[in-house]
Image (tube, rainbow, N blue to C red; front, side, top):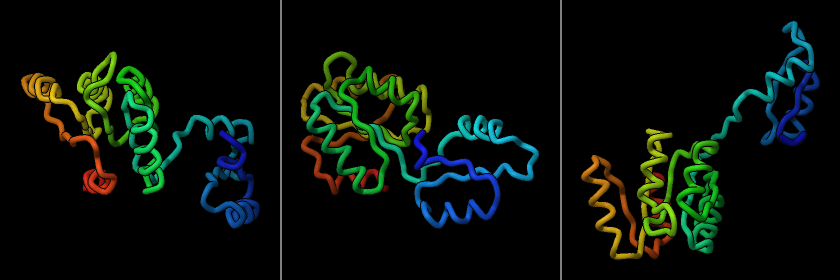
Length: 170
């Protein structure tokens, strides 16, 4: 983590000064008076998870332009978003990123979107999943998932950004 996003503050007066200068991006740890040395405090701070007020969204589509455009729109709309370009990468990134929501194309080369969604659901049972597709073959894949007890929301491509935002905020 960079010095601008994390700083260890030793003492209350310096914390107030730093807070005034960098309010939105500063994470505080006050160690003075707690019997903790600065190196110990740094180790504790590094092991603490970063708290994000923005909902996290993972977008997976093998069409890079679509994935990147959706990620840009969502980032500008108050979400913390990452774009990936395959089902396999979606599963890999989801395990570390821990998204609140997955937006995934159904028909992708390699691992399809439904298999990626099922794998991510196993890792993150509370993740909200939105699938989208412009292909007719999607119906068979969805039916197989339903037979296994899974139900997903699906949007047809092309997805209008406002429709997508409405679904995510619902």
